[in-house]
Amino acid sequence: MIVVFDKNFYKTKAVKNSIKAYQDLALFNIEETANNIKVKISKIDQDVKKIIKDEFCNYVLAETKKINQKCL
Amino acid sequence: MKKEIIIPINPNFYSLEAVYGAAYIFLDSCYVFLDGDIKKEIKVHLKNKDSSSIKINKLKGEFLNELLNCSLRYKISHNNKKIREYIIATALISSSKKENIEDFQEENDEWGEDSLSIAVPWEEKFGKKKD
Figure 1: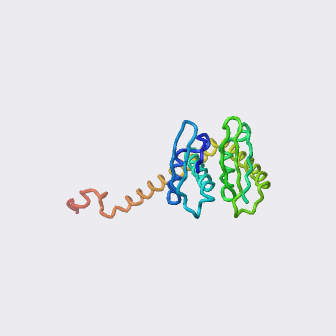
Figure 2: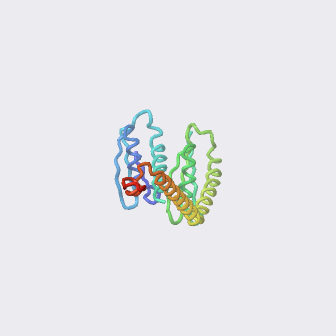
Figure 3: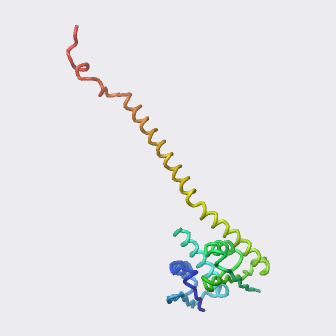
């Protein structure tokens, strides 16, 4: 399962914080390019297999907003 | 069943902060994902959660209302930034001045007591008494 975050909308730090929070539920590999942050999710816990991608995206968005608020 | 809608947003009308604000409010009721072109068109993907009873068509209208609300709030907050900072600065300065005056008065009161008789001249304390 791969999720691609656009760097214009999501912060790398937010993605890393989210990975820390979700590390017990799956294995995450992060790959950064100039415009995107690519996250590969594998070895997902069976209980959360259906929702982990969407929940992870929500978490990253919340973290990004938090980081942006601190910067203001 | 999960359904997804994509809401296109013109960044000339709504700031990215406003989009974040509206998206943050909807995190509880649905899954939100942002992509698209930040200069031309921001795409907001909304997907309802299984537990959520809100219909997906209704979500779009509610999201756009919230976006307008957030946009106005950010605009007002931006316009009032200087006056807000001025009010806070004035309040902080006036409170610190008041504290200083109170401290000074307290120190004066304590000095006035002179329990060790430091302010009494040596002659008065130990000098020969005149008849």
